[in-house]
Image: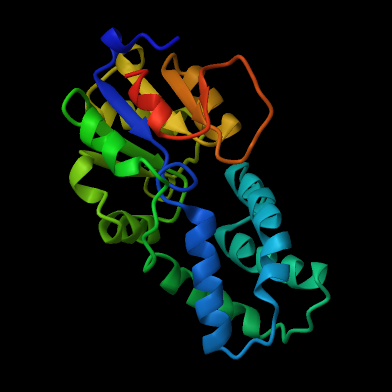
Length: 230
């Protein structure tokens, strides 16, 4: 159970929690494949890309690969998985086009704005994201999320990614609050939920990936469920 009477500050993850990454990513690939004249079946590509992308983000969170390796290798492995022939020299161009265009799409998960409208009257709202700073700030502005949040904390700016406690310490310091008064809402059990719980924060797991049930904290399958908790 969430002890809402203790909470003064609510921290959200961005991608896969408020900002619908899969939908916006699919629209981005559709746009740039057409622009670059890639003769590829989009559905076949996406059927392998999303899982591969999650795996490479995990490696990036663990500092096992660089940002550039993340951006390139997820594409290369996805093309290889569907036996799509590509020129390795096109990967850098494709990666750059993807980053440039991704934040131009602004689809949010259902219930995002109504949840934020309710919570902003009771709590200070903030974002902690592992995404690249310029891209994330553009997403937040483009999708209309900016007015709801007092602070945007990015791993790129801090130099440490969730679940590293340093990014949570930085976020608490920036927002002038303490773990006991803070709640984290995110989609990643490892990065968002366990990272926050290990700091002494409360947490709600937005299960946007159909992950197995756990008892670490409350789990919800849609954002509207959170309204009743807070």
